[in-house]
Length: 335
Ligand code: UT7
Image 1: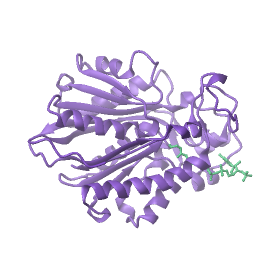
Image 2 (image 1 turned 90 degrees about the horizontal axis):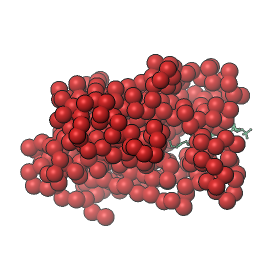
Image 3 (image 1 turned 45 degrees about the vertical axis):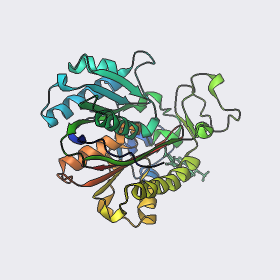
Image 4 (image 1 turned 30 degrees about the vertical axis):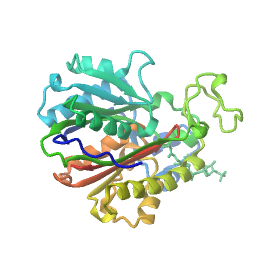
């Protein structure tokens, strides 16, 4: 597959970013009171120290709306300037309506278009690629992409293999048309392999279980994961798609200002960093604070970098994510 040529005259810029996190924080010691685990094991195997957990009526919808309000404020824009809201989540409020439609209403952006994206941890980066293409087409001027999750509602807090990893939160980005056509996505990938669906899934009933029930943690409507297989797949595939994307765009890892990866496990990211010989400050890692927040992790990183004043106009930023499906994706931007 080749990189799409930029449509004449239309560039895309990141106008704003925002986040929302539930107040309640769950530490590793808190988890050690629930399951047979400890701070040392969790820190060494995952890099996670704390994660935020939704309570008191905080929902995927409310977190998404709060993050979008923050991103609009950062962009200096009004809700009615939005043409479309894409909401990446694996913890939508329900299958119909989309959570995105409710968020559009909540923030006062009606009648902007609204759509949920279901690509698990890859959802936000899939969303960036779709939003960029909508804007470059000339049909839409301003599109918000949100990654929002309340993974705590699909986590079995008796399964130590999964409950230590996940956290709740949301992040949003506002993308808008720009006169400089060189700005925006330079190269991207969006891939899937459904033969691997049983490595990471949320079964509703016994009918949803794979033929071999190996690894089922005994509780429906909670996340089931073959951690070791996902780990190996993530390390190999992340490196491969980063290299493929750089090649498509005709740039090298040295040209990148920053790599913003899905926060799956610190060890996965450190391995990719080492194999690719990336300097420490080039890859954003904030999993210690938030855990694995699936679709929300990339925009949480983007926001942290932006707030720190470490992203400049013209910088090359590479977004990359891998998750359930299996789905994997990259988006290489000239900011
Ligand atoms: O977001 C994208 C999707 N998810 C991921 O990317 C996650 C990818 N996978 C992982 O992050 C890791 O596989 C885990 C963190 C889930 C697990 O780490 P691991 O190093 O792969 O551990 P393991 O499953 O191989 O287990 C090693 C040992 C086992 O004990 P034995 O059999 O060696 O005696 C486990 O029972 O560690 C035990 N163990 C634990 N011990 C203390 C598993 N979970 C825990 C725990 N605390 N929480």
